[in-house]
Length: 300
Image (cartoon, rainbow, N blue to C red; front, side, top):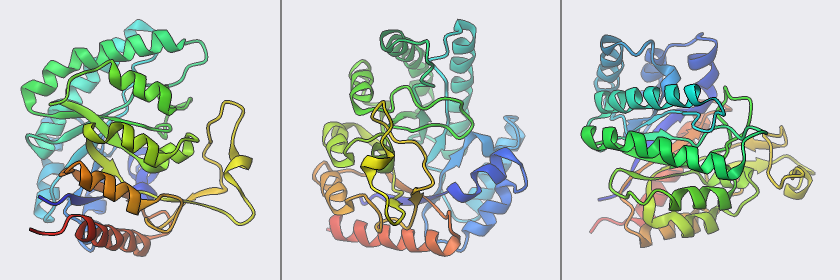
């Protein structure tokens, strides 16, 4: 079975989830023009968590001819406040239920580690995240939902970057959670670049646990180098000199990435995070992914 392709409106994230100047239903209607099999959702897109509102979103997605392969959630499991961590676990449990409601059995519900708070040690952070994910795993099993841990940079509404942004921390966290049926990796090559890591090297380390993937791309503005963007802690910030662009035209080596995925028999979803410069670029990114899937996953 070939991987399927989904679209995520990175360009409209703040409009839908922040300022509320666009509704998720408007985005779904716009997406009808795109050559995608599914529409990835973000928890902030939902009008509310009421069953009726969630059902309305799911119905709109299906009526537009799409599936809902992944719900992006951003739990903060590293909050130094134990009560806040408990609330994060409770909220993520509800998001697992919403994922089932929107996408059915097998849907991926993204999880993050949490923010990299200055006063939280690596040891404490890792322990809290493992404990939190282990607590919600039974709920994921009950609903047939797969938790996908993303090598993330930073939720757009967070104060601090991702705790497990760097590859070494991410891999240590992943190793602490041996579950493979209902837990895996939501791989994003561009986030590895933002972290100052090699996306291909990261994929080689996690390929057998990838359950979903984001396929965005980044490019440097003229006269800028990656070294110039590196901060003192070895990571990269969201500098205006590091921009989203058409997938396949940036810094990621998608031939190497797709070859690794094909070698491991990947059958999950690939979702573009694009459109920062308009719907035409989003369509171009989707067309690129179609060609790559056909090239590396030929029909038998």
